[in-house]
Length: 137
Image (cartoon, rainbow, N blue to C red; front, side):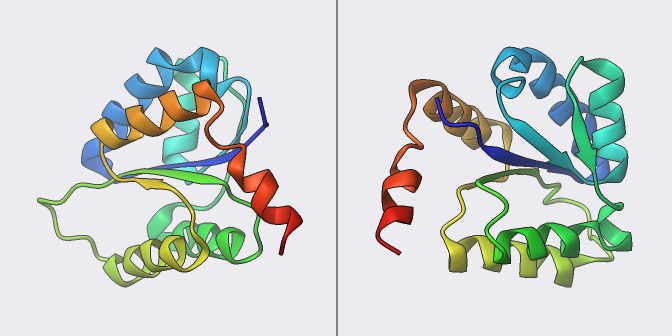
């Protein structure tokens, strides 16, 4: 299995859901390199034995840091549990992050259901296509 760089991001109302998700799939996450925005990363580390590289809080620049990592090829997958019912003061940063995922072909899950599908795909080895594609760039 290829070791992937996985970003974990959650809006305030979705942080508990993402933490619970990482608890449920801790054995899979432990095989990869994890990055998270500030508070989300802290909460994941407090509730699991996972090591997480923490960036700034999303509204304070963490979303932009993640965007830079996408643009420089440092991220393979993003799990971003978004809260669609609450206005976000940093929505332009969120939109830019989502756009960069599309530009660079980064798999993105924005809810529990799609995150579970992507994690199961990782478990089955379906992300090896990225290594093959990189050979031809």
